[in-house]
Image 1 (cartoon, one colour):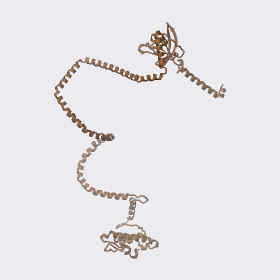
Image 2 (cartoon, rainbow, N blue to C red; image 1 turned 90 degrees about the horizontal axis):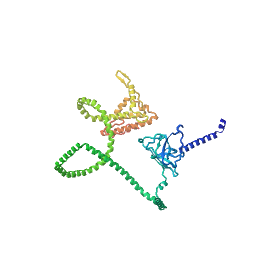
Image 3 (cartoon, helix red, strand yellow; image 1 turned 60 degrees about the vertical axis):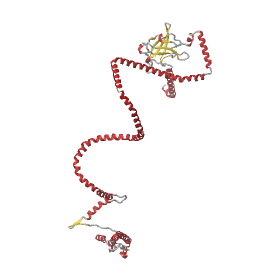
Image 4 (cartoon, rainbow, N blue to C red; image 1 turned 135 degrees about the horizontal axis):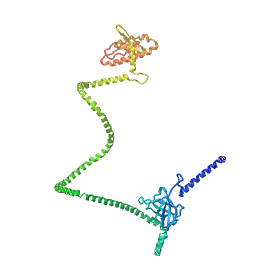
Amino acid sequence: MKTAILKHTRDFIALGVVALLAVVIGGYILSNQRFYLPAWVPIVGSDFVDYNAQFSTAQAVTPGQGQTVIVAGVTIGEIGGVTLEGGTAIVEMKIREKYAHIYKDATALLRPKTGLNDMVIELNPGSPSAGEIAPGGTLPVSRTLPNVNPDEILAGLDADTRAYLQLLVNGGGEGLNGNAKELSATLKRFDPITVYLAQIGKEMGRRQAYIKHGIRNFRLLAEELGARDTELARWVRSSNDVFKVFADQQSNLRSTLALLPGALDATNNAVLASDALTNQMGPALAKLQPTAVGTAASLKSLQAFAKATTPVLEDQLRPFTAEAGPTVAALKPAAADLAATAPQLDTSFSVLNTLTNELAYNPPGAQEGYLYWLAWGNHLTANMLAAQDAGGPIRRGTLFSSCDALTIYEDLGKGNPELGTLIELLNAPKVADVCATPAAAAQVARGKAIARRSLEQQRANSGATGVGATADGAQPAQSTAPPASEAQGGDAR
C-alpha cells in the first residue's frame, strides 16, 4: 500500500484535494439548505427547543421541506411536523436554543413566502410581562391566524358583488392597457404629496407631544398654585402695592418720558459722531490683533521672570541699595570731575586702542606682526646689555649692512649734521673701504639716489622756515639749496 501511494503520489494528492473540495461544497450547500448537525457535534452542532402552535387550518404546511419560523425577518427555527387534534392542526416549531423565549401573549401567522404557497410561520414572541411558555408548550388557536386565499375572500361576496367586481377589474384592465407610462407619471406626481403628508404627520405628532407636555406642565402649575394659595395672595397684594407706587410716581414718570426724546437724540448724535472713530478703530484693532496675540507669550514669560527675580530684588538689591547710598553720595563730586575728564580720556584710550591694535595685528602671509618680534627684541636687548663694568651695563652688538645702506648713511650724515652725529656713533665702515669692488657699484649708485631724494624731501619740508641742508653739511640761507648730488660734486654721481 505504501509503495503504491509513493508511486502515485500526484494522483493520491489530487484525489485528496477533490475530496476536500467535495466536503467544503457539500457543507456550503447543506448550510444553505438549513441542515443542522445534532447538538452533540462539537462547535458546529445546534440544539433546538420544541414548541407547538394550534391553527384552524394548516394547508400547504409540509414538514421536512425547509419551511421556517421567522421573527422580524430573521430565521429562528423550522417547522418540524403537523398533527391533528380535536379538529385543529398542531404545528410543531423547532426553535434554536438561543431564541427559545416565547411568551403567553405571542402570536403566530401562516404566510406564503412564494406564489406556490411555500409557507412560513411569522412569530411574534410577545413580552416578558405575560409570562414565558415552557418548552414543549402550545400556543392556543386564539393567538394564531392561518393563511387566507383570495378565493375565500371572493366566496364571501354575493353574486352581484362578484359580477360588479369582475366588471371593475375588466374595466380597469382595459383602461390601463397601453397606459403604463401615463399611470407611472401620475403616480410619480403623488410622491411630493406623500413626502409633505409625511412631514405634516411628523409635525402633527410632535405638536401632539408638545400639547401633551404643555397640559402636563399646566396641571403641575395649577397644583402648585393650589398648594400655595397663601403665597399667591401675598404676591397679589405685593403686586397691588407695586402698581400703587407706580401710580404715585405718575408725574415723575411723565417728566422722565418727556426728557427721553432729547436724551435719545443726544445719544443718536453721539453714535453718529462715533461712527468715524469706529470705522478707523476697526482696521486698526484688526492690525493690532497679531501684535496682541504675539504679546501674550511675552507677557507670560515676563510674568515668570518677574516672579523669579522678585526675591532677588527684595532680599539682595534693596539692602545693597540702602547700604550703597552714602557711598554713592560721597562719590558724586569725584564722578563730576571724572565726567569732565572723560572726553579727553576717551580720545586717549581711542588712540591707545589703535596703537595696541596695530601692534597686535598679524598680517597674512609669512611675515609676522610686532608682538611676535617683541619677544625677540627683549631677548636681544638682554643679550646686548649682558656685560657690565663699574660704570654700569655695556652695550654690545653687531651691525650688518649692505653697500647701498652704507652709502645712504654717509650721504645723509653729510647733508644732516644731527643724523651725521648719530651715524658717527655707529662706527660703521667706510664705503670706500668695503664697497670698492665693481660688483658693489650698482648698490652704491642706488644708495646715493635714495639719499639724494631723501635730502630733497627734507629741504622741501623745511622750506617754510628757511632752513635747509646740503650733502656737504652747509646750512644755506634760502630754502633753494642745490641738490645733494651737486653739493658732493662728482662723488654723488
